[in-house]
Length: 393
Image (cartoon, rainbow, N blue to C red; front, top):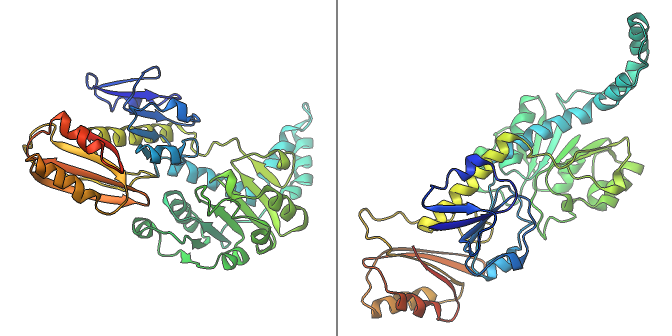
């Protein structure tokens, strides 16, 4: 019986992926095998020794103590792309709000005096509507920084709107490159993207390399009249640089899903309450993806979409004996795999198939044996230097 502790309200369609009778899933479990959460700020003291994995039903994992999990050999999953369409649609909304006088026009219309007859109302509207004139997106240039699941969808939608698209992503993966429309002009120099974009949309994770990437120098390099959209992460933008850019140029408008007190009440700022992924569809997609990834990992050791472990999959040998797969996590030092296989050989355990991959300081192996090792062998492997976790699947 696998045990999953949940935090937050996880969409039921995702929880149903765990078969009844094989999984116990609730918020009050002790000694769980895994943790499934959304936005809950997970503390290290909430992670018991039994935990082998943490799955975040969403793209960001800044609410998970990542370094601690890595040190303990705990795999941390996220769900990249599951909420991409929801965020893309809100970015499009932001583009339209940033190009037309929609919000001030609505505020004006809803504030008109009740009881005004329609003739007078029409005359008033004709008199005032020029205040809310905007510009069209067609023919404008958008610079997209980060061309992953969301950024590539925004690029595709912008092209459909008739916009020119510049893209920047120094760590563009092969899969992301295949998804990217060929009309996107890839720009290596960020300053060139800033200088040539009427709109800039950010789609970056919050990493040491990206925190504060939009700073005073970046804002100063932007095209006069630029509109900056941030539906990615609050930490990647220096709020003082934004305020300065709005006050004295070149920024015309800032649109963000991350309200900051310093920007409240400004007419050149549109703030939304972190609703980029707040759709029923996105929540369901994230829950399903997170549940499937946990299920695969717990049952077969497969790792997909981990933010701290390598991607790894070893197909089961047909008709393989049960409980003959070892999952081993160790520090990424030379000779570890050879040490483990030598120990198995000493106990007359034959290796049928295996795979080993590493990511930075962590290495992970799946080893299929022809017979089930006894508990003593597993304990012996676990006592070796640099071995972090050993599990028989």
